[in-house]
Each structure stands twice: as C-alpha cells, then as structure tokens.
Image (tube, rainbow, N blue to C red; front, side):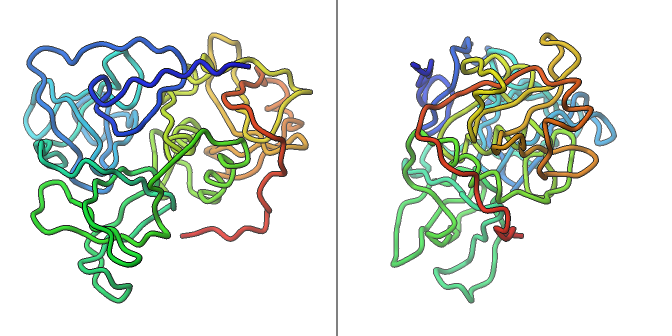
Length: 310
C-alpha cells in the first residue's frame, strides 16, 4: 500500500518538518491577513467571539495564526496547521493570547513528546518553571547544553530550557504501536469538546495530537479524518488503525485508535480518554469502519499497566 502523503513544507503551511496526510487542497493566506503566533501554552478557539460560545478547537504555544480582523478583545483567525477549510481552521481567539510572529526565531524545531513539559529558567531540574508546553507543541531552539535545549519563547526576550527526555528532535513515519504509545500517555485525560491537551481533549483531538507528535498532520475533525488513508475491514484491523463511528458515513461523529482484540482508545464525554470495545452496543450500532495511514510490522498494544504522566 502506498500512503498518499504530501509534504507541503514551510511556505505552504507555515509549519516545521510536518507532513500532511492525504491530498488536502491548500489555499494561499487571505489577502490582508496578519501573521501571529500563540504566546500562551494553550488558547481556545471559539465559533463566535465570546467565551460562552462553542469551543471549536485549541491552539498551542508557538502555533501559527492568521489574523483576519478584530472585534473588541477578539481576533478572527485561521489556523493553517489545523485543516478544516483549505486555508485553515476558522474561529475567534482572544487577542491577548497572540503576539506578532517573530521572523528571526531559531530555525531548528523540536516537538514536545510528553503530556506536559516544563520550561525552566535555567538548564537545571531545580530551577523555576517559567511555563508549561503541552504535547505536540513545537519549540524553536538554538543551543543544546548537556541534557537541555534552550528554546525561544514568543513575546519574551528570555529563553526557556527544556530537558531532552521531554522532546523529540527527529521523526519518521510511525508504526501503529508508536502512535499508541504516544496516545496512551493521555489516558485518563478528561473530555473537553474542542480540547487538545492533558487538561481536556476530544476524540479527534486525541488522534490529531498523536500523529502531530510524530511529524504528521491530519485534518482536525473526525469527519475529515475519515477521508484520509485507506479503508480497512474490521477483521483486518491492526493496532494504530483509526476506527470511526456515526449514524452514516457522511455523518461521522467519533474516532478512536484501535488497540487490538476488539478494543480501541478514544476520548468520550462519559469516560474521558480510556479503552472502549467495539462490542459495546453503541459502538457496534454506529461503527463505520477503519482507516490505515501507515504500514509497518504488527506489534502488541502498549502495556495497559503503563502509568500516566500527569
């Protein structure tokens, strides 16, 4: 099987060393859009300008944002790295969560590989924590000192330091078990509609983050994730395949990562991130099929006794 993977590069998507899975159309940035980036560990994106509006997704530290306009304390934005439309994911963010994107930031980028990484003032475990960075956040760095990377922070002159055990600096096409090992770290995370972090995550956010950690971008939402990869029959499912649910193929509303033996890892409002079974009545009634994104040798799912990094 040949994976239809298109590397769109830095100019097209504004992202570093990320490959887009699937042949998704790409649009140029809208005329007059201003480039910015997220200056806080996580910022919510809403469907309309108001914190009581529907949260549609979240953006992480350093994530690229295109600002299309402003209304009071709010910015109308597109997130180029989160596909919903060809130009990105549309919504509204609080302007105070954004800063102008630095043109002189270091070119080297690492990616946070644990649920929550701590950025410290100095390269020592005992030094104060400046802020946290959530899984899959991309951090530009310019110096490695013993076991620590010095990373730039948006809107700040002083750098932060992050330990090598919390990041990935190189990536390759992951196997299914690689994806499961990553997603498994978020087990027991509470459910949050539109969420993308250990504080709260939704089903498609879990799948999106697990792939992004390994350098691959999926569409943000489950219905469009269903269009990526190749179909897989239930009897042929392997660990790491995606499994989809909904009332009809044109109405996909849930996604999970197949663990093996009829089990899958998903994020639901009832249980948060946990194991579910294809034999549960609701799952059996709404199961729409699987999709495979990567080839690789069959392996066992991660040990279910694995402790969760909080």
